[in-house]
Amino acid sequence: MNIFDIIGPVMIGPSSSHTAGAARIGYVARKILAQEPVEAEIGLAGSFAQTYKGHGTDRALIAGILGMRPDDERLPRSLELAKEQGLRFSFHTVQLPKCHPNTAVIKLTGKEGAVAQVEGASVGGGNILITRLNGMESAFTGQCDTLIIPRRDTPGVIATVTQALALYKVNIGNFKLTRPIKGDMAIMTIELDGQLDSGVVELLKKQPNVAGVVYLRAN
Image 1 (cartoon, rainbow, N blue to C red):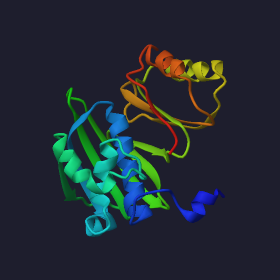
Image 2: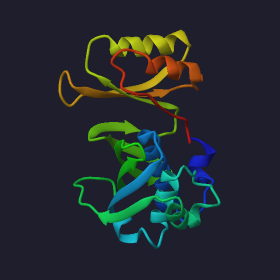
Image 3: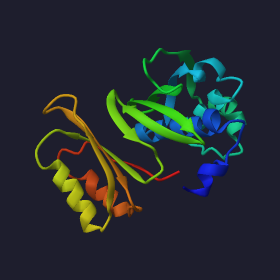
């Protein structure tokens, strides 16, 4: 067990679950969008929906969407900063059967028209679990460096990606493939045992049938 699992994360309070974890979910959504966000529609489930104003969950989610980390001193002012930067945002409640009590669904629209949707839960101690990406099942925590690679479901793509990682001596700690429809779009989520050189990311982006590469550094 890591000592930070006991004492909690370095953060702007008041709550590791409702503030630090929420900021991390918002930050992941921004990275998935890969553009400057101009609109955020945020659905809140469970205790998030009931206590989000009192616990600062709204400010934390918006802070993450703006690119802030949980310990950013600007976090308490994130709603005001978002308005200053032209980010439109709204909050509403959602019903998600069997979801974790601290769950948010974030739909972002970027300045160049891209749209991304992320569903994630704050599971305690500032830790998160991302459960859906753009409507497809996922499962990663952000505690390891993580690659998220949307790609066309064609033969050879997984081999190409894993061979590139092996070439740069990067070990795969966990691998998940989500493929709702055979032959359509799929998402690879790859948790890594180490960091990636920027050249690896650029190499992966150039591979046939790879639609994009998001590299999330560990929290």
